[in-house]
Image (tube, rainbow, N blue to C red; front, side, top):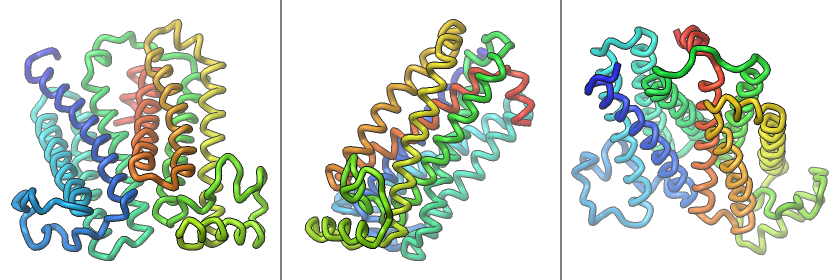
Length: 329
């Protein structure tokens, strides 16, 4: 399995993973700068084929939106090459099917991106576009790990059931939190609570009309559109989700960290999860305190994706190979 062909396929799978993470960052920049309609047509760019559009015209919002499209096309090309390569390889059928599923997913994701533009950024479509991006990212990690040398050479046995269940809960919590993040971003709720760590001047929000009025008074001074009670609740749910995710990851580390460290297999991944979690929490606070500074908000999105990716990787590492193959077939 270490033939030159498989080695290059393994490298392509890793390139696809990191390219997808960069694509998520590029997409976050489009939303953070609110330039999703700076290129109003699709699949063309101002009537021109995408790669024929002059680089000199990529200015302002066009730079972010058209750049996002170009990166997405490149990721799609990598995914197509990966699927074809897997199809002609001697890898198991379930892995080939996973490659085809990833290709289908990236095509669907591209169509949702086009629909988002053609229908003027409808929130449900934009939210689904964001969720599919995270789901596709998980699939790229599944493929890359299944092709990795660690997969081929690691011991068969996984860790105990409680650790595997804990890793599953941790990954699921992060995935749900990212859905709440997409809901918040695409319903203009990112600053529905403009203060931190308080919420509308309160430590425990009441969601009363008085609280909403106080928030809108602050937003008025910041020259930001007023928000509704529903937007305040959506923002609070995301903050509450951050606390819950932090608690779940912290509990997992203190309960199972020593066992994972002894086994060595997931040690670096778990430590990376803790590091990224702290960065992510800090970026979330800074996003509010800087009034959604575009790059800080975008890094907040991409570190969230990185956290999901690391949780996915840890889940793969703590499970036995036979169990993973059985679930993926």
